[in-house]
Length: 165
Image 1: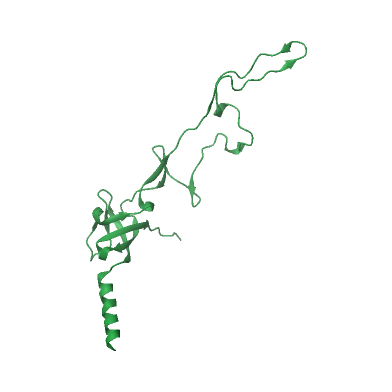
Image 2: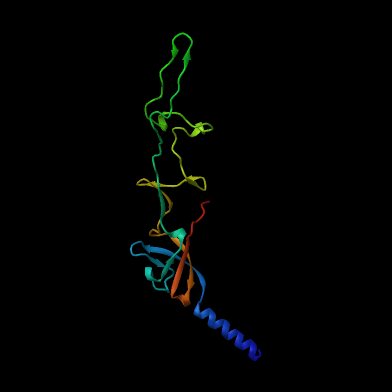
């Protein structure tokens, strides 16, 4: 082995030992404060060294009851009867759209049904009036992380799901 090869190998060993950047898997052992355990040889990772990405942060949207109010006088029409003349105006009250007219081209199959958000063919959970798009990290969640800053910080990239079957 010549000097260049020896120096190259020493550099590779040094980089590997420093663990500058590497994928790491872990398990959430505490939610509040957030703590993640990687393996028995490493200390528990505290929230101060964890950088959370969007897929592991809670994201939710409110479920809103949605109705339009059609003001009085907006929906008026008259009929003409050859014997008695014109009829009086009709549809003069206020109407909520759930009880009144649908706009032209409306999808009648959705009338009276709840709209459900789905992911992978499964409905997303609804809690306290919110659709949960991403739930926060919970105890026993498996995560994949990226070790950065020579192991001083960890970017939590995503939850890891085991496939059934």
